[in-house]
Image (cartoon, protein in one colour):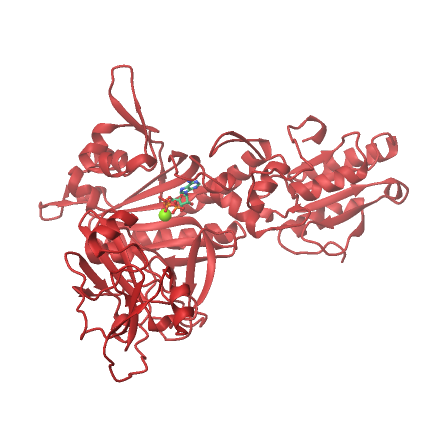
Length: 575
Ligand code: ATP
Ligand code: MG
C-alpha cells in the first residue's frame, strides 16, 4: 500500500478523553474512531491487526478440532427466558423489540443459541464430543465503557463451546482450549498468565482467566513467585491461609470510649494509637438473602464475591447509611458485632484471633475497646471472606505471594450441565440412557487483545507491534519524493519486498522526512527501510528495527533476505 492513498489519519495531539496508552495511541496513530461511547469504527490498520489475531485464533481452534460456525447476533427473548437469564442478566443486555412487539436481545454471549442448536441436532453419544466456535461482534451495555477497545459496548469475541458425554470428556476439551489459549497469546507476542478465576455466585466449577500483565489492567492477580509452585489467581478468587498469630493477651473488660466523628479505620486507629490489626471492621451489606454484617480485621478488605457465596446471595451491595442506622442503630463507621441482632453476622477467621479488639459500638461517636470474640459476641458463621493481597502466604507452598495488574483477554470455563439441563440438551449414551450434555465455554476478546498488545508494546514515540500481529511488517520511507533517483529506488525496494510476500507500505507522501519518521514510529511498523540520497549513490538503504538498536546500511540486493530473517525472529538490523 501507498501511504499517500491510505486512510491513515495520524494526530500530533493526545486525545483528552483517552486515559490509557493503548486508547491514546490507537486514536493518535489512526487506528480507531469513536461513533458512540464504547462503539468504534476500526480503520484499515486496526482491521488488519484484528484479522491477524483472528487468523491465529482460528488456526489454534481448528488445530484442536474446533469447527467454525456463525450464529445470529439477534437472539429471541424466549431462549433467554427458558434459561432464566432474561431477568437476571440485567441492564448489560441490549434489549429490543421487533415490529410485532416481540422481545429480542443483541448477543452478549451465545450459550442459549448454541445449546438450542445442539439440543436439536445432537441425540447420540456418537455425535460427541463437539467443539463449535465463532468470531463475532458481541454487545454489552457496560456500566462504564472506557479505555477505547478495552471495554467496549460492541466488541469482537471468539467464543467456543464444547459438548461432551461426561466430566472426563469436558476435562479433555478444557485442557485443549487451555493449551490453545496459551499458544494463541504466545503467538500474539504477549506476556500473560493464566490465573484461577471466580466462577460466579453459583460457583463450584473450574475456570481460568488469561491475564495480560499490564499496569493499566482492571484486574488484580496474585501469584506465587516460586516457579515450581505456579499458583496464580484473580484476587476475586484467591485463597490464602489465615493469619492467626494474635498477641494472645489476657482478656480485659470491655470499655466504651468516646470517638466523636471518627469513622474510618485510619481515623480510629490513629486516635487510639493502635495497629489496624487490632480493629474489627464491620461492614453492613444488603443482599437478596437479607442484611449481612461482614467482619474482617482492620487491615483487611472484604471480598464481596466470597461473602456472596457464604451467604448464598445473587445480589449484594453495601447498605445505604439509612439502612445501616436502621439495623445497627448508628451510622456507618460505628457498627460493631457486640449486641448486634436481627442480622446475619459472618466473621473472617482472622477476626477470632484478635484479643482486646476495638470495634464500633452501634452508638454514634462511641467505640468499644477490649472486645474479645467468643466472649463478647458469636458470629453466625466463620468463613474466609477476606481479599488476599501481595505478601500473604501462597495457599499451596506458603511463599509470599506477589501481586500484579492484569487485563483479562480470555476465559475458559467448565459449565457442566447447567445450560443443557435447563434447556433440555440431552443425548442417549451407549446403554440408551438419556443424559445431559456436559458443556464448556471459552472466550477470547479479539479487540481487547489488540489493545492489550499495545499496552505491553509501546514507547514514548508510539506502538511497537509484535511482528505476528503488525498491520504491515515494513514501511519504506522515501526521504524526498521530488528526487527521481530516490523515488525510483524506493519503488524498486517496495516491489522487491512486496514480491517476496512481505507486507509493506511505502510512505510516498510529499512530506518532510521528520513527519514520516514520526508517523512510522507512531504506527509501529516492526521494520523501517529508509531510502535517501546516500543510498542512491551506493545502492544501499537504511534498515532500522522499531524495537530499537542500531540502524544499518544494507545493500539493496541483500535487503529481502535480511528483512526476512528479522521477521522470522532474528533481531538483527546492524549485523
Ligand atoms: P470483564 O470481567 O472484563 O467484564 P467478562 O469476564 O465479562 O469480562 P467474558 O464473558 O469472560 O468477559 O468474555 C470473554 C472475553 O471477552 C473476555 O475475556 C474479554 O477478553 C472480552 N470482553 C468482555 N467484555 C468486553 C468488553 N466490554 N470489551 C471488550 N472485550 C470484552
Ligand atoms: Mg470473563
